[in-house]
Length: 347
Image 1 (tube, rainbow, N blue to C red):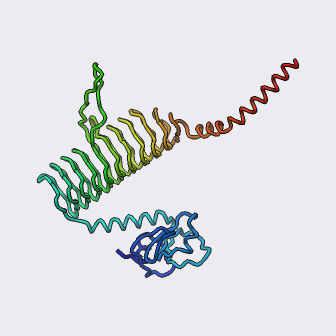
Image 2 (image 1 turned 180 degrees about the vertical axis):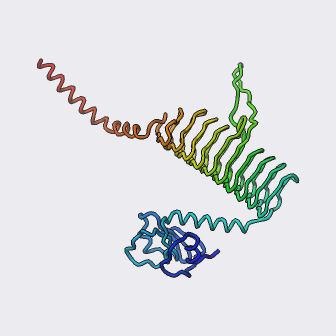
């Protein structure tokens, strides 16, 4: 697909400086972009490339003052990064609209229902009484279990496995290799030291506008639902255990793990490789630093924690500052001890 500067400016509500008829057919990083490509500049660190790049169109912040002439057509916007993301999203939607129909071979149970403008990739399995909304895209090698519901315009990428009774809202994206609704880790210890599996009878509910990265696992609830609320963004390689609830617009970075029945509030930010124990609550707006181990509830909204076990972020920074000064403090203490010994000897 090809777009002119005028068309792009209309989409992102920008102001054109240069040739409104300049056209692009692909995207490129500003340091590498070639003629016929579109790029953007949001980080001042890359400003030098603005004057040397071969890109045909560049999106920039309206506040940027040029130091040299620029050969490319510029489109000024309040925030170049957000504008570029909006443009990419629009491009992706236009591409997806062109993808419809059912490839073969596909197995679809006769009781399954499918909306309009749906795409189903080859080697996909769709079980009994599945409901697929309008505009849904299911890429090859996916498994959709019995009684699953997938809302309008959601995208299921290749190799996703969705177990039975899962409910997925509208505009949800689930990336390759993710498993939704596998059994929660429930085993009851027995008198002889063995473990008896506890049947996992619940499901997973994913609300609207959620995005889930590749190779993430979200376990079904023992009873009730594991819930990912609207607007949450989950990275690759996460483990979300049974009966966990993740609040609206919360974000979790890669390799984090959340144990069973923990409730995470709205607008929480969790860094990579963080670990959170089960049966606790994380208050709205909390910030959990990467590799932190959270062993008890965070009750204060907006709190920031770090470390293992995790504690107040500001206090942790102070402790680190003290730790860095320990060698110098040791020398000072030894010097004071020497002075004290000399004084005691004189006494």
